[in-house]
Image 1 (tube, rainbow, N blue to C red):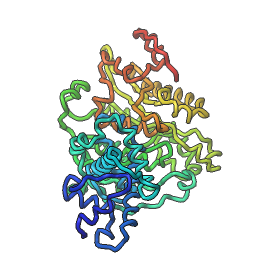
Image 2 (cartoon, one colour):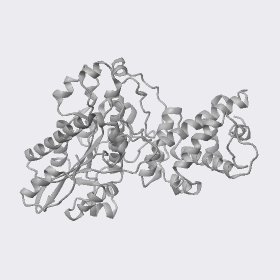
Image 3 (cartoon, one colour):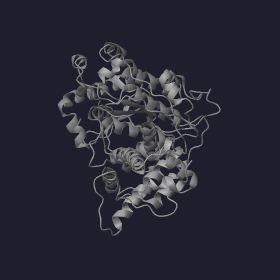
Length: 506
């Protein structure tokens, strides 16, 4: 291994000013960073020219900052930056095939962002010319501009926020190739599986976690999911896979949902803080269950009808009937009060799918929450649909050609939920639709990505994401930019409910 000073020379790139002396917080972190940036061959004493090494460093740094810039909306939308750094670390691990901890990646980004800021603040006669540093400094400038008003982006704040992040590493595994049929259907989509793993646990034979209900654990027995998620649990969350997008293949979406459910479903007897116990009226055990398949169809027959034209991948999607059955079981025997799911319908015809018109295979995102609540002594249903449509014009523009399809689909979902609730003997007390999340104005928004992030936050910090189940707290839904579902409001009025004049744009 070469001396750190030799490896450090490769970090001095045009347009950046690293302070003299120790660059990273410790020698151990420095060695890991040199291994990531400089590479094993040079790290072992190779004779590569310094200029070539610097090109490698610049290329890797560019990839890392590009990942960060793409996730600015998530940083701005989360109250805890450490959670966003987990997502970034998972994406870096996948793209750069590394095993660095979350804290390593956040420190690396902070060091080089500060180096760029330091360069810009210093008097200098010669500006950097196009070359090894030009594209890198451009992407760092975008990161600095996007986070200029965020105090967590400063080096002093990073020191405190990232130390609380989960210090886990990623196990390197070979990436399996996608089936040919899936390659055709999702042409143009990155099908490299997200590599996610927990720490090497001593008790990995107890997985899926034994405290998960059978209906939940059943989603995790898929060989690919089991291989990727084995060992992830409440006490061993590992590194979070990337948020799925409206073009992600169904396996990637199931991987994300499986990770969230495994990592944020605690064992019985878990102690909750006072705020959450009051908000949810419980003594122990988290009252949430997450359906771990993206809901793209209404029933199993419809899903089977798409088997051939989806390249045999429709089996990886869920359907609404299955989700409602899952919810009924969670309420009746699972001791859960709230059930969450991710809906990802696509509005292509089967003829369009056969023609491989990939632009038609984008999926629309909507998250659903079903919750058992009591109103005037009667247990009934409270439903909320997180649908970032009206609050984000770019999403509305993307789906404008399918606006009528989206409207009909929403109406059909509402009808199916209402019919299911009646069959279960649960009157619909309240229904809400809408919601929003902080988003960066310079980015095209993705409805599936937003909804996946909302579900993750609901599982990770339900008390900060979902209004309480109490009737007197219903105003909180409106504060979160949800509107009452008009058709259910009329039903409520017919049964003697309070009148509310709320504009609703479905």
